[in-house]
Image (cartoon, rainbow, N blue to C red; front, side, top):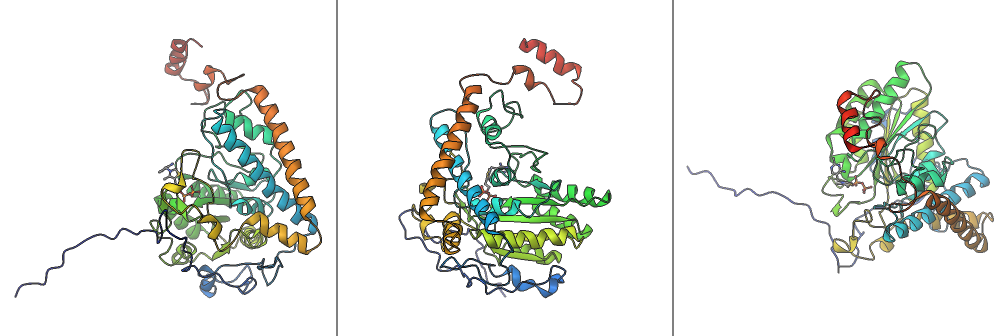
Length: 411
Ligand SMILES: Cc1ncc(C[n+]2csc(CCOP(=O)(O)OP(=O)(O)O)c2C)c(N)n1
């Protein structure tokens, strides 16, 4: 009897819309703010699986904070949070222009994702360590890292602590809990787990935070990190920033729509939250919850922040080639800066005038920092690191063959 023949084929996931189409987020389920329960931090993971399939939200459409996840933040802390996000946005805008002016070779902005890194920073204590990607500079801004130092790195000038050896935006500051960024996606995720394991092995109290984008969860280091984190119950917060896009690739390619990215943690019995990434209060609440679990030695937590990459992937990218131009404005979770601003206005702790004034102040501050950094140098002007620096720090002690190469280079 002849077997029935099926011609096999592969499935290639496609986004529902492309340039020229109407944006379509109708498939996205957005729960009411305040409607998701908040389990105790020592909840057993099997009793909170529902948290990986919803979206924790605090700020409602009118700007009120509501529900069990509302974090206990003072007005001053909320204002500081808004300022950090605004400052990051102004910084991004200026550096984007600087790249277009040829002052740097490359830049990557955070537009629409400011709440995530800015709010998360507040949950950490001195000595804790982030293992960020290139899209969490809010961690630095919210920790008071000097903007001039950030710019010097972007300009690869003589003020760059990386001595011009790294791509722009690959910052590094041990003192500010910001591990050196590397271009190889996902490598930092497993390193964060190792750092957290080391902290536990040496009986310390510091915790680690791992960061990854939706696309990069497809890397094997992501999976290795989950194995080690769950096996040893390492004190680490495993953050996934789901901004819907990995350059031109929509999150469905990395299977973000096969259940959720938060649900990846459930197979490892890691408590997993899915959070509104454009809601400063929700991000902070989730970060506090996860950080407390890590500090109380209850093990890792996985947090997926649902957000949208409103800008291009980088200065080398034109998103209008692969998605509708106005998709960002159709994003159902709104703009993180506007949402926190509205909340503060509702509290009577901010106003339209204050906002405009703050924007002007930040522009002035960023321009002043820019003048200072550019006085040292930009990509093509001023003082740059010595060619000798190329040969330094490859090893702790320079081996003879590098010494010879340095001589050949005439430096
Ligand atoms: C191992 C590796 N593969 C590919 C790249 C090229 N690359 C740089 S960024 C990027 C997209 C990452 O997307 P995602 O993880 O979603 O983060 P996002 O840029 O959206 O923040 C790719 C493919 C790389 N840097 N490293």
